[in-house]
Image (tube, rainbow over the protein chains, first blue to last red):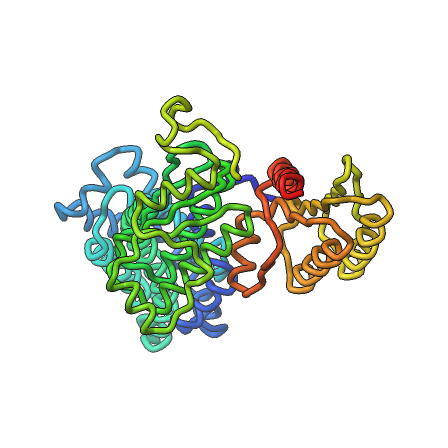
Length: 324
Length: 123
């Protein structure tokens, strides 16, 4: 197994984005890169290698001419690293070996842009400037046979678009990372499992239950049952506005799963409307242990746990009693 | 891989340590049915903590064990079903209806002892 700590950020990102060998092959097919292109690229290899410095400057000069582009150049070490990576990029572009390794190398630069907050449109403009400059030298070299020059340039352009595709994806992926994190946070917040007392959990459900959320609720409840060694769970669905057969099914599944782990679930908060609609729908909730409201549910739970509430003042709250 | 069956007072504990083949399960069923009678056990605990999957055959066999043991006079508790396993079972529509389940071995033993106390009271 590969230790995660040993991975570079680019490698980790590549894994996260699912840039497998197959995915890279697919990307190559999308831009239409084939064997003939590789041949043409080899024919201009030396030409491009001789001018990498010039092309790199074309890219960064354009960035520095734009206010939006200076974010990359503001920090000296970042700018230097970007330049170096861009040079490596140009060298790699003409090596005709575009596999996962090639794509992962591009990710580092893309991450750098993304961290610096470079906008996609600015990047695209600068990259176009670079291609322009590449195109100019190629056309000059192939002055006598412009068609061959054009074809070679077009082949190289396919590689460039492969790279642009990857870099754009990274910038978007990183921007959406925040959204994903917030979604996770909302999801977690929406399914709290509270311990009321030893061995007794409360699971208040508020809002709409869909399949995805039902799954999360069940999962968090089951792990909480294990973590807290719960015996009784009170599931309060007062906050669930409507219940249809699907939601009812989810509730039943959660209850059954909890039962398998040795915990009893008491469902509370079925309003009159909800109860009636369930009857009309013909959903059999007989399996469920239902109590009208949360208070009743908690009392029932205490009883199941063998505690008596307030009925015996001398015993005090929560003194275990034997059930008869 | 056969399952060790431990005798603890009048309770038998079958602790499943690794994934079982269908044949192992059948062997376990036969072995338990035999021992419940021979050792005059009143309770059986099947510990599945180590299992990360319970398929339909395993579920059916465990149900079979429980019913067999019941007929021979012993109550069965299945303990240690993992959250993922419980979830998967529910999704697949597998159930252990009519069989007691508990969180872990300790809870399972407590459940059996409680059942025994109840029986004693009824007498």
